Image (cartoon, rainbow, N blue to C red):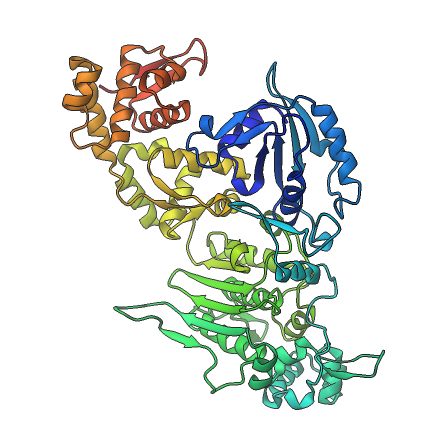
Length: 599
């Protein structure tokens, strides 16, 4: 950790993973709430010695760097407290708590909090799991409600959530046509299997769908058994706040809300097995199947079919059916499939894309589906989806955790990374400036165009870069007015600026420069620079005029003359570079100078 990394965190870091506290003389009590919040969310950095004004726009005004007077003592106090009964678990290593010399007179204390693995959650303070558990959102640390704490406790159970005995639910609550259909499918795939000779109750026992509590002799259906094979009414009685929903949103015209929908309407027993089979057929109905022989048998399976099967299986096996108001919703769009299941991710998104695996919330349901050919071997589900998308030349799927909604969404895109129409659109929009953008910036614009929005997390998975690297790309594009940000911390999304006018700005820059130089800066600004341009564009022209008058002018001097922050000056310089108006020659700091490219 050093000054440059800290400056990058302050300028580009996301609020959900960064917390600054003044802490000049002592360790603040609120540091423990932030420790719990970071550990239970996505980890993050706590920087002591910096005060933050969340409402300030510029970096200079937002963060005031004071430093801490007794950094080593605060570091010692932190370790003593974290290893006491203040918190229920220490996740940190020695190198995670550092004293950093920011400059000659300022010392900071930087604490890197790692995200807790699902087995160790919740991390709580003051010995009270329900009153001392915190999580993080774009507004800061918040106290977890009882349902969130219980969800973390459930997820820590390696045995899963679907094996619990449901009192008073018996074989009478099983829909026999559903079970018969499953058994027929099982027998066709597992000819000669010993389970085929068992009666229905014993068959269900083998899969954990029916169980006996040996401590008291009670027996009956488990959560897995009822949800997979139950009659609709008992399922709705036990899980009154849960519903399954499929919506086809393709080929919509006029005021059409959907092309097709499957939800409970009394015409089918709404259990998971029936939902799975019906929805899978609808999702794959218009996918092409090639004719291919393997030996004497036809094999018309494709990577696309595999990806959809795996995604649908994952959405069911990782769903948290205990959450109030939970919905298992599958959507079919013209360009993608969207799989939404109740719950949160048990692993960070980055680890999932790298092949990390966690046990499913519903391992018994997972095994039932796997035994009839749905779902890969344990731990290989998401890599299978990634591999299938690669074979189909589709862009990587979009996996997102909607923490506030307690929902996980995965979009399976049937589009390449750079569709031809996107490239044509961007070239038309940007003109000659198209070639000035990096491949990462073009990727960000492409995603924003195709998917209607883009986020830091989405680009991390597509570009295989970390959060800070992606943040720099997004900031450049917002500085250039190509993207517009909807600021919500980690959940900030960016959309294409539909009102962007590259040719208008370029013409304004050229005209403004010539008028500004001939009439003087102040007269040029008032008499010929703007001509309908916005205040921001006029300021860009002012920066260009000042650089023309003095090629050795510094950002600090520009800031002083125009009375705007250095961060704002950099934004206007980025615009000038992008529009081929200026370039820098020599060192970025001392000794370099600006060159006007076009006049």
